[in-house]
Image 1 (cartoon, helix red, strand yellow):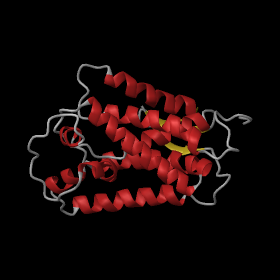
Image 2 (image 1 turned 180 degrees about the vertical axis):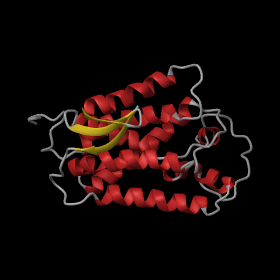
Image 3 (image 1 turned 60 degrees about the vertical axis):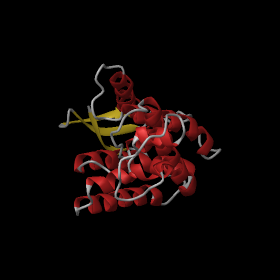
Image 4 (image 1 turned 90 degrees about the vertical axis):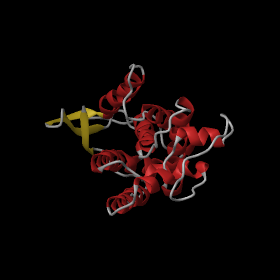
Length: 234
């Protein structure tokens, strides 16, 4: 519903969001390799396949795994899956949200803590998806779970900050982050209640949201308040 363009939220503790930009560059580089000819089998090697991950963890009976072009330990895919994307729109959507909201979350945590936060959100998102769909043979790729953690953290840190968005893809609006991100979060919970959830990994989004809401309290600097405490909005 809302496509974020820019937030009115200046950096306070860091001069440049090196980790946010670095993550975007890393995702773009991996996607370039994808379009240059990586086979579906190779990409699936780095993806989370719930039926394989859960089986490897001992929660289901073991059974034969399909042949893969690259032998990747299944637990490693909890990290690798978040750097691959299905198409350019998948990549662009995730990177846009990361660009608009990631810098301020990085500002609130510092570079190293933010990188660890982002990766942990992605790992937990992938794990939740696998646990909720343990028999699925479909590969899961994309940074959506990790980005959902960033969205959740931003909402807890800066709900009153104004964000410029495109509503319905073409109407420019200036709204509070609470409205923009609250609508996005509500949509995720609504979608998992529908009979047919479709190809989108909604459970991964929910897992990332939960991880972000919990970890932001742990990873933020001690002098950074939650919920824009003390902020005056014009």
